[in-house]
Image (cartoon, rainbow, N blue to C red; front, top):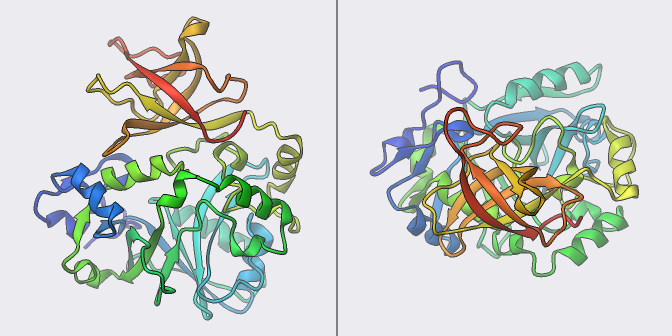
Length: 372
C-alpha cells in the first residue's frame, strides 16, 4: 500500500467503501463523497460521521529540546506546552509569508505534527537544517500513522493521539502570556461560526484505519470542506498562495503568539499587526444559487460597479447543506465591505479571462471575515 510520502499516487483503502468517489487536487487519494454529500454533512454536524484524512502527513519529534526548539523557529509559543494540549503553528519565510501550517500535539514523550498532503518532505528537510546540535530527533511516520477527521462532540478530554482544533478561539498558551492575542480572540469569537464546528484529528495505526472507522458513517471531503468554509477556517494550499501572511486569513487567532521571542518572519507579523493594514483580507461569499456552476480555486472575483475590476480570487467553493453555494475568497483590503461582487467561474487567470470559454458570472455577496 502506498502512503502520502511515496512517489506513487496515494490511494486510501477507504476508497473501496460503497459509493466512494475519489477527490482530486489537494485531496486526491481520499474520497470526495460517498454518494450523498448533503446527508454526509448533516451526519458530521450531528457527530455521527468520520472523514478520511489519511492523505495528511505525520512527523514525530523526540528529544528534550523539541518544544523549545520549535518555539524558537515557528510562530507559536511552545515552551512548556502541557502534554495532551493541542495547538497549531506556522512556519514563515524570512519575509513573513506562510510556508507551512502545522497541527501540533505533544504527548509528554514526543511531539506529533500533522501536515497537508505533500508538505512532509519540505518541512522535514527544513527542520533538519535548523536542528544544529540540539537534542531533537525527526521522524517521518506517515507510513505508520493515518489521520481521521471527526466532530469533537465529547465533553471529556480525548485519550490517545488526538489533535483538537483550537479554531476559532484563543489558544491556552495565549492566556496570561499574550494579552493582545487572548483579547483579540475573546472578543471576536462571539457568535463566530467556527464555534459551531468543533473538530479534531485522530491518529491511528495505518493498518487499523478501517477498524478505527468502525460502524460510523463515512463522509467525504466535500462535506468536510463545506463545514470548514462555513466556519471561515483557513487551510494551507487553499486560502494561501506565495504572498499570504497570517493577518490576511485571520490566522492570528490560533497560530501566532504576538509576545514571544524572535523567529523567522516575525518582523512582518509585528509590523502588520501594529499598523493593522494587511494588503488583502479573507471574506465569505454567498453565491447565487440559481446557477449550477461553482467557481474553482483561483477564479477571479470582480467588482461590477467598477467595470468588472478584478479585486480578488476564490480560494475554496462548496455547496453547504443549509447555506447553499458558498466560497471563501481573498480580496483587496481596500474593497468596501458592502460591495456586491461577481465570481467568474472558469476564469482562473490573473486578468479574469479564460482560455477559449466565456467565464460564467455568479453573483456574490460578501460577509466580512477580516475587517478592512
